[in-house]
Image 1: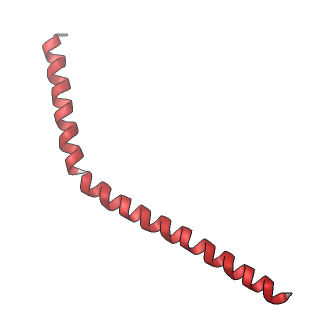
Image 2: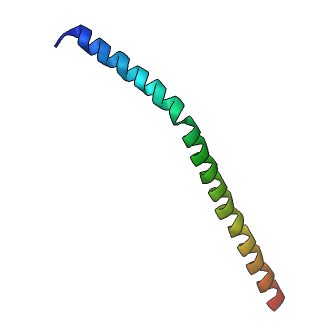
Image 3: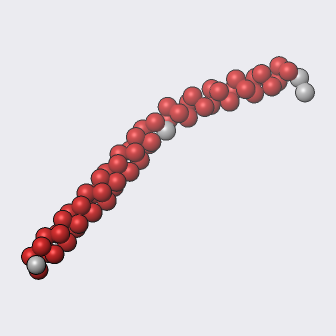
Length: 61
């Protein structure tokens, strides 16, 4: 194939990459926020349950 064709293909692919990265930046931000909120909820529940178990065991002694 012609080298000019491949250079044009690479340039078009880079342009498409930049256009899509700007388009999906907002969607990625929303997804990251949801992921972090879910992670905080999961991690926040475990220590509370663990503390309740410690309180229960200390009352039985």
